[in-house]
Image 1 (cartoon, one colour):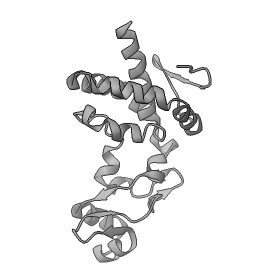
Image 2 (cartoon, rainbow, N blue to C red):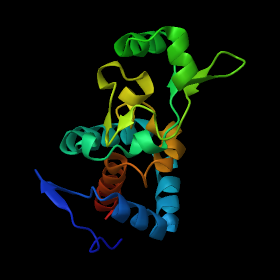
Image 3 (cartoon, rainbow, N blue to C red):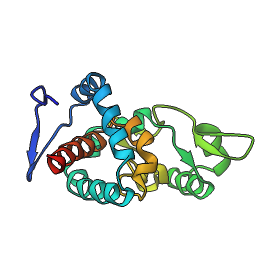
Image 4 (cartoon, one colour):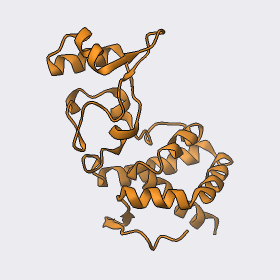
Length: 181
């Protein structure tokens, strides 16, 4: 893995890449390597994977300011619960029906999603309803959640879009190769 193309930011002891352009380019150039790495992880112990990802996420996530990125708000489809609709509509001073008509798409089963990508609440690179944002927004990138092994497909789906996921996975590659050497 060649990392010379990156302009890493040194924070604490990790070098982190935050350029979305560089992350995307690196992801495109390393599809085979990433597929191989994910296959290797699928053969690993689930508790070990969770522990490694949790530790790396704990070190990396606080060092990356999501408000300087906002890429998740530009690319994700977020599921919304009824209580979240109520909270966001109150935050904006709208009636629930008005809020739903303007911002929510509701399926015949009653499931709700944000009606547009990028998110209607994205202003610049920041959420205009941050205090009332939806659960899916709060949870993303979700590396703190258990059973990462079962979510590897989803995690890697966002590898090229999220500096946190990218840096966690790249550090996990380094850690994994160091432990097998």
